[in-house]
Length: 455
Image (cartoon, rainbow, N blue to C red):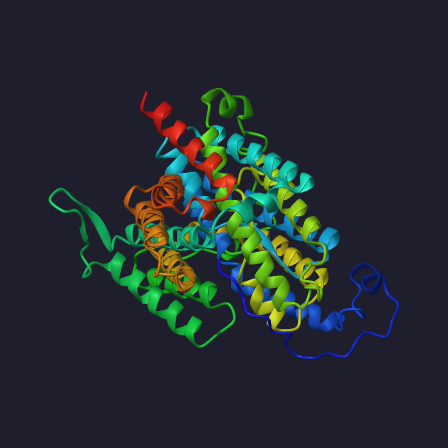
C-alpha cells in the first residue's frame, strides 16, 4: 500500500495517572494520553470501515454467504486488531486485505475453480507459513531478497486489478466479443450511481475528510434508495439489530486437507508473496510515522506485529474470511496523535460495535462499493514513483507484473511473469550479480507451477 513519510504529528501532554492503560500501553513513554489515543482510534476506524461493506461483497462473489462473510470480516478484524494492540502495542488496526480478498475470490476460487472452503484452507496454511517464517526470521530474508522494483510493481499491479474489478462491478466496463472489453451504458442508472459515488469519494478524499470512503458508500446507497435502484429499510430492525450476524456457515468450514490434496503450492506461495510485501511495507511506513523506529533503524516490536498478523490470518480463515493486512489508512489515526496500542484497541472495539448495524449490509448495492475499489486502486498507483525507468532489465519485469494482473485476472500470474522475467533478463544481460538467490528459487517455483498446471 505504499510507504509513508515520517510525521510525528501533534504534541500532546503525557498522562499523569499510573492507570491500567498506562501500564499496558506505556502512554507516558510515547508522549500521549488516553483522550488522544481514543480519538486517533476513532479516526482510523472511520477511514478503514469501508471494508465492512466491501469485503463481504467480494467474498460473496466466491460463493461465501454474505451474512457469514460480514460476520467473519468483523470478527477477524476485531480479533487481530486487539491482538496487535495488546501484543505489539502498535497504533495499527488490521482487517482483511484489499488485493488479498480479490486474489481469493477471483483468482483462486473463480479462476482455479476451487471451492471457497478449500481456498480458506489455503489461507490458513499460508497464515501458518507466515508464522513459521516470522519466528525463524526467514520472512525478513525473503523480503530482502526481492528487488525493490518488483515490490513496487506488485503494489501497482494489485491496484490496477482492484480498480478493474470495481469498473466491472459498476458495469462501467462490460464484456464485448469484438474487443474483449468495452465501455458500458453510462446512461443507465447503475453506472450513473457508481460515477456519483466515485466523485463523492474522490472529492472528499482530496479534501482529506475523515471517513471519506464510508461517507461515499452510505451517500451512494441513499441516492440509490431515492432513485428506486434499491429499496428503503422498512423499519429500525433493518438498520440496527441485537440479533448479531452469524458466521456459523463459515466457522471452521476451511478444508485444509482439500487444499493440500489439490496441490496448491502456487496458490499458497502467491498468498505468501503478496502478504509479505504489502503488509510489511505498510507496517514499516506506519511505524516510521508513529516514531517507533530506533536511531539504529530497528523497529520496536516488529516481530510481535508480524506474529500478530500471522495468527490473525489463521483466525480469519477459521472464521471464514481472507488474509489480513495492516491498513495504510491507519496513517490518519497516527496523524491525529495515535502512538500506542490503545489507538488500535479503540478501533477494534468500534469494529465490534459495527456488528449491531449489520442489517444495513443488504441495502448496500455493488454500485456503492465499486467506486471504493476504483479509488483504492488509484491510490495504490503511487508506488510507481519508486520504479526506475533507466534500466531496461527492471522496466520489463515491472511492466509484466503490473499489466498481467488485470489482463489475466490473476495476481499470481502477474507475480510469476515478473519474477521469471527479472531473473532471466538479469542472467542473459550479464547482470547476474544483481539477482539474490531467493529469486532463483521463486522463479523456479513459478516455472514448475506453469509446467504442472498445463499437464
